[in-house]
Amino acid sequence: MKLNIFKILIILPLIVYSCKGNKASQQQEEQTKKEDTVKMATTLAFNPAELPEEPVFDILTTIGTIRIKLYKETPLHRDNFVKLASERFFDGILFHRVIKGFMIQAGDPLTKDSANVARYGTGGPGYTIPAEILKQFKHKKGALAAARRGDAGNPKRESSGSQFYLVEDAAACAQLDGDYTIFGETIYGIETIDVIAAQPTNHSDRPLIDVKIISVTPVAQAAPAK
Image (cartoon, rainbow, N blue to C red):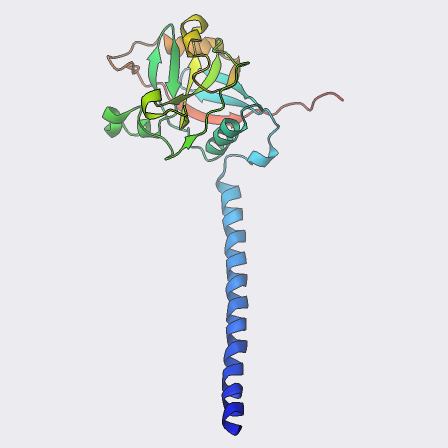
C-alpha cells in the first residue's frame, strides 16, 4: 500500500507538469496565430473581407487601366480573384497571349521571369477552380473569363487558378459561350483592351514589347441608395 501511494505521489507532479506544459504550448500556439494574422494584415494589399458582394478592381497595366466588376453569381471565381489580388499575385505578370480581333490573356506567374519564356501559358497557383458556367453571361466585349485546359484533359471544364482573358471582339468569342466561366466584365477602359490587342506579336501570340500588369487594386464604391 505504501508503495502504491509513493507511486501516486511521483506520478501526480508529472501530470500537473504535463498539464502546465500543454497550457503553455496552447498559449504559444495562440500567440503565433495572432502574430501570423497581424503579419498577414500588414502584407496583404487590402482586406478581402471589406469588399462588397460585387467588387470592382482596377487592373493597372503599362499601357493603361482596365476597370472590372466581378459577378456575385460566380463566387468561387470572384473569391479566388480577390484572394490573389490581395496577395499581389498579379503584380508583374505579363499579357502573354494577345490575339487582335479575339482576346487578351494574362495571369501566368511564370511570365514574371523571362527565363521561363518557353513555358509561358502553362503556369498557375497550383490548383484549378470548379466551373461556374452560367447561360446568362456571354462573351460580350470586355467580358472577363477564366482560361482553362481543353475538354480532353479537363472534362469538367475546371478553370485555371489564375489565368484569365478579356474579350476584345464579341463576335469572334461568341463560339466560347457555354464552354468557359465568365466571372466579370469591364466597366471602364475598353480602349485599353483594344490597344493591348493591337500590339505586334510573335508566332506564339506574345507581344513583342512586354505588356505588364503593375497592380490589381479594389476601387472604393459608394454605398447603394436605400
